[in-house]
Length: 453
Image 1 (tube, one colour):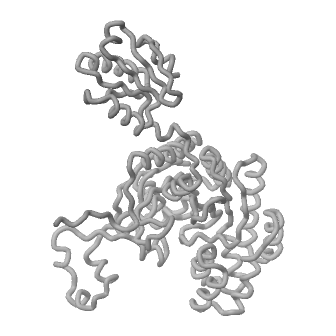
Image 2: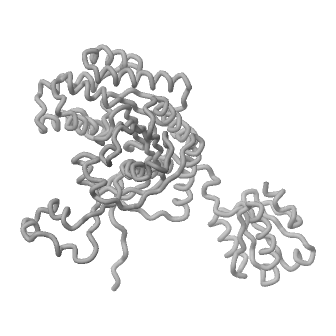
């Protein structure tokens, strides 16, 4: 007996309905990207591991999907490493490529490789899948789509304000209530300096980035496990428990970090972005959150994360400023800032809240029923003309019982059905049925467009 086929954990199939809904999300985001002047690029699904390794921190490196070298990949692997069963050491000998972990690092590589062909500042968007060897759970997948927008070659904080407006535009159009959380990596560095743990900034940010997932108590336990003294953790707690509105939080941070040059700079940048974004008005809520760290090591300035307010799920959008990501590829000093929409989590949110317009699931506007060879040819001539006018139409391919054809019309949610039988063929008319109201009209073929619009 044949084994029932399956797909890897953390991946999903999408049928026609799901694909239509996902395309609604992609189209909404793509439309906003173009509205804000971003141009599209694409990069390969796989990158050299030398491109990917070391860009996401120790945690991120563990989640990279590695691709075995072609051919006899064990041939050149040293016997002692094979016998040691050290999988990490062995993977470096038998794997030179990996699936991309995100779209930002490949974008940085793209910029460096094509530096003579792009005009700075360069604004690009990219909508493609990424892969992470994570433990699958609700809202967390091993294969998922990211929808990125980045600007490189400009230090201006207006880029951050514009990206916040872009986020606001997308979620306003999707009708999803969200909170945009903001922080600044410089503030986190200033806090680490103030509590006497400047050299442990990575350990601190990786831990506090998990507050929403594991809670403050567990974060403190993790910090202590990593060797952060209890006295330093006690100094850190007030920062993670700041209360009040955004203005009050920023004023408090300004006072606490006044002796830290880097921390003060971070507060100043964050305050400027918040005030200017507020001045322009916005649909989404905005929340200054000092516990926001975003564990990726390449962020250096403003960091952004978006949470859905009506569904329990992780971050659905994130991003931030990275001042020297291209430096690791031999092009130092090029600043950039970007955001990434997590399309798969947004899809889960819209499913939970049933926020899709009815038109999203409409696969065809007009279905012509099939009453025989001559009638089918007359129908196809009209179908061709309707398609020229941008009206999606199709002919049921088989001349079968009317009940079966009408059942098909219901299954594809066709708003209109057209019937051309022998009588209609002789009279030069069609019968147009509105599938929602049940009304039927006898009209000329040239009047179909007028009636359905």
